[in-house]
Amino acid sequence: MKILVLLGSPRRKGNSESAAVTVVDQITATIGGEAEYIRLTKEDISPCIACGGCEKTGECIVKDGMVDLYDKIDGADLLFLVSPTYFYGLSAQMKGFIDRIQCRWSRKYLLKTPFRKEDRRLGYLICTAATHGKKLFDGSILVAKSFYDAIDVRYGGELLIRGVDQRGEFSSNQEEIEKAQLFAREIASHFPD
Ligand SMILES: Cc1cc2nc3c(=O)[nH]c(=O)nc-3n(C[C@H](O)[C@H](O)[C@H](O)COP(=O)(O)O)c2cc1C
Image 1 (tube, protein in one colour):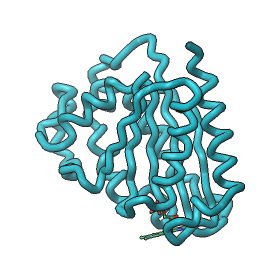
Image 2 (image 1 turned 60 degrees about the horizontal axis):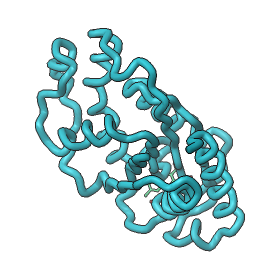
Image 3 (image 1 turned 30 degrees about the horizontal axis):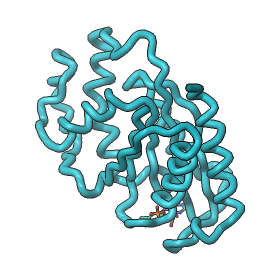
Image 4 (image 1 turned 180 degrees about the vertical axis):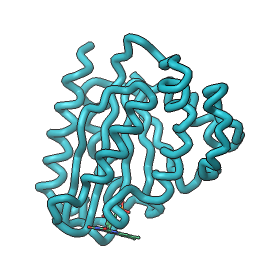
C-alpha cells in the first residue's frame, strides 16, 4: 500500500508534520505500507494561471514540480493533506498545490473522464491551529473535500488539532497524540489484508 503525505507547513517538524508522522507511523506499524512525505514548500509549484488549457485536454500546460506530483497522487492508495491553519484556511503552499488540481477537475467535470471508476482509495485531512474556535477548520475541510472529489479519492475524514502553536506543542500533548493514534487505527481498519 502506498501512502502519500502532502505537508503544507513551511515549518520543519512543526505541529502538523508531527501529527502526520504519529498517524502514519501507527498505520504502517499496524498494516504495513510505504509512506512518502512531500514537503510542498520545497517543491517547484507555481500557482494556477487560469489559462483554460486543461478545459480542452485535461492536462496542465505548466510543466513544473507538479508533473511528478500528479503521478504520485495517481499511484497512492492512501493520501493525507497536512496543513497548519492560516487565517481560517490551509497554508498558501497547500492551497497553491490544490489549485493546480484544476486539470483533474476539468477532466472529471468538463471532459467527463474520471480517473478510475471503481476506486477504493481514501484521503484524509490533518490540520492544526493555535486557537479553539468552533469554525476554525470549516474552510479547510471544504477545500480538502473538493480536492479529493476532483482526484476521485473518497474523503475519509479529518484529524483536527486545536490549541497548538509553538513547535513541539503537539509532541508534548499526550491527549492529542492518543487522538492521532486512534484516528490512525480507524484508518487502518479500512485496509484489511
Ligand atoms: C500566517 C499564520 C496564520 C495563522 N492563522 C491562524 C488562525 O487563523 N487560527 C489559528 O488558530 N491559528 C493560526 N495560526 C497558528 C498556526 O495554525 C499554529 O501555530 C499551527 O500549530 C502551526 O502548525 P505547524 O507547526 O505545522 O506549522 C497562524 C499562524 C501563522 C504563521
